[in-house]
Length: 399
Image 1 (tube, rainbow, N blue to C red):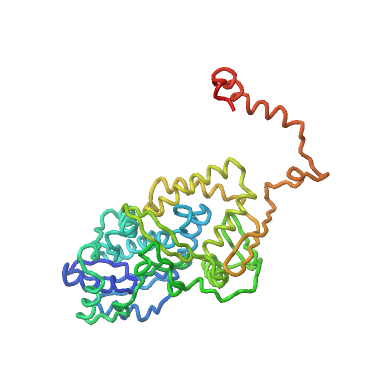
Image 2: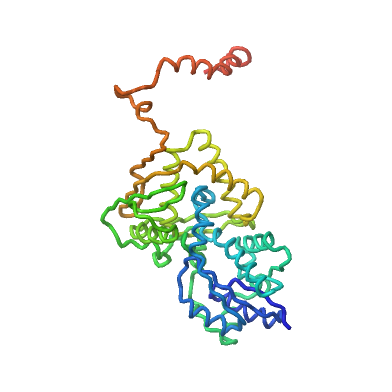
């Protein structure tokens, strides 16, 4: 009896070829696992392609709600942006897929799991570190790292074995998409000087021009409704992708530092994600105490790197999760956003638990701030510097 492997199957060229290659070169029975995280596509056609490629079983799992609640939710609470720009579109889905790979491998008594990642990308790290954390006994296989095929070689291999692929040698881009956004690379985009052509974009095609305003409702750091109409998070994200994206806003063009040590030019579309994160940060500015806000900001960068680097299942990430969860207790309220042609921005925010006090902030007659208290405060605040200046600072260096 052949040993079994569970392959994270996308339905694309590489994973379709991987099914046959794992059979032919490693004599493995291949179980294809398709996880729907909101990427869209014809799942029946994808299942048929996997069967035609030689998969013994094809499993399609709708994990959109799980993805939103258990992976996107924590990312929102933590304002996750890698290098201050990228909302971790692909990074967030990998630990979820790894979780289902392990679950399926145990169900079918498989010896290993496999993915379709290359040797220079980040996803190989995310898949393998995650599955190792969840199931150290399983082997990780990476056919694309092993076979040495060029893109043309892979297409010819698929044609030789009658695998019904849709890609052609002229197809220029590599695309990964889920609820949280869309990642585009390859082709002309590999030239960092070249402007991305409009045909690379899908979520942010400009079809609306008349300005609109809408309200995002938050409960404990999570958006729970639009204009006071509640909806599940995965549906809310989908709605915002269409709504905000129709104004041509939500594009990211960045030079990114990959974990493997190379820089890559990446194009992302994430209109819903960027709108939610912008609104969430704005509400936190209203409701978070100053020192907590500053420490949270410091940890957000660390947390983002942990997820980007594949450490979703790790002790440090779990510990920061606890901090982030506690910080969101009072992040309740509403944020009003306005969309105009090519842009989206916050125009208002309110909360019953706001730390903004009008009587303390205003300079109008309602001012309740005791200005005379400031004299002693300022004197004590600068006392250490005053003492140092008198005793140690050379007078010639003074301004």
